Length: 236
Image (cartoon, rainbow, N blue to C red; front, side):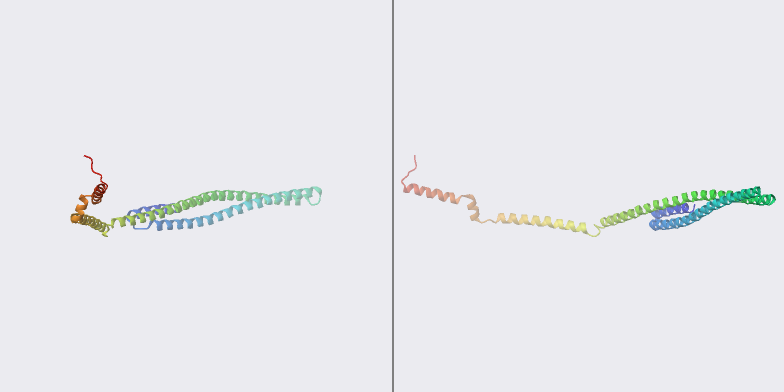
């Protein structure tokens, strides 16, 4: 079928696009869906026409059936009329015979209409199956298109991220961080060096004060003077 061939063509286009990037698979899929929708519209139109012919054949069947019954009833009325003496028997037989011939023609028309209706009904079933298949394929490819669009977005985002990651060092970011790290280490070492220099240049007074406890020595001296004033002598 035409739409199946188109689906195969879409599949081929998508595969080749993914391989060599010659064509955009999304655009190809969108075009394929548009083509299938056009096929669906044409199929629905044809289906409606065949259904209309089936309905017409059904109406013809009913008309021919009614005509056959009508001619049969007229033939009976003619014979009854002749039986009552209301008309010559010869005329009644002739007209009744003509009515029965019309009845047979109507029955033949009914049979022909029945055959047409059966054929149209089979066509309707086949066309309804085709329409359903097209609808299913349209729905399938529309879902595939949604997935394909999502995959393209993810792929583009991933590609851009990886590209940025690949270009980090070329942009000098890593080198800049390394230089900043080296600068911090140097500053820390310089601060420690200044600390060592400050420790080595302490004043003599600071060294003396750190060697003895001036406050404690002064308190001891005051204690001795106080004991002397009070006449307290140390025990021997």
